[in-house]
Length: 189
Ligand SMILES: Cc1cn([C@H]2C[C@H](O)[C@@H](COP(=O)(O)OP(=O)(O)OP(=O)(O)O)O2)c(=O)[nH]c1=O
Image 1 (cartoon, rainbow, N blue to C red):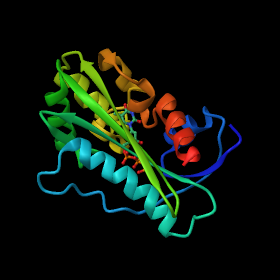
Image 2 (cartoon, rainbow, N blue to C red; image 1 turned 135 degrees about the horizontal axis):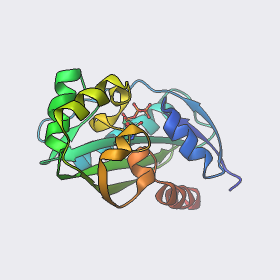
Image 3 (cartoon, rainbow, N blue to C red; image 1 turned 135 degrees about the vertical axis):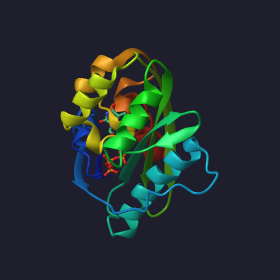
Image 4 (spheres, rainbow, N blue to C red; image 1 turned 180 degrees about the vertical axis):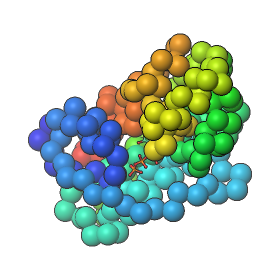
């Protein structure tokens, strides 16, 4: 693909994944208010944030190329979980995910000053039952702190996953197939 875009993200994972599409891009970060509206459904929330990140980039003056923004949340019992606040919050999340299936929702949005297009990818992830010792050791590995739902499937957290149905890349932060489709659709207008 010969297109050049902007990636409105501070995430090193998204940078690496976008490189896999062979798209030329430069990266900058946006400072968006990521709070969820009262009664906002997780799927609406994650898609709104992806659009907000992309459109904030346009508002910051990045107008000469399309801007891509993305957001990932872990959803269990209809509740969207972001990055862990502290160890207690993380431990409560792991106990909730232990031995069960949750959804990872990743939305991607592409915007310029004329249009915004977005898509949502939902992946089912099943965790094996986790012991207190595993949860404690995982926190101290330093991996959970900057990840939605407190785990990284691409790292030590991969051991916890007994089954996945959907897009592995979306769980890591950017669905490759769907992002390429969205970009092509955006460029067609
Ligand atoms: C569930 C899961 C999430 N994550 C990451 C993906 C996202 O980078 C992060 C969720 O936080 P996000 O708020 O979606 O993204 P971010 O703050 O890292 O980057 P930015 O907003 O600047 O684009 O969690 C993994 O790396 N592996 C996983 O298995």
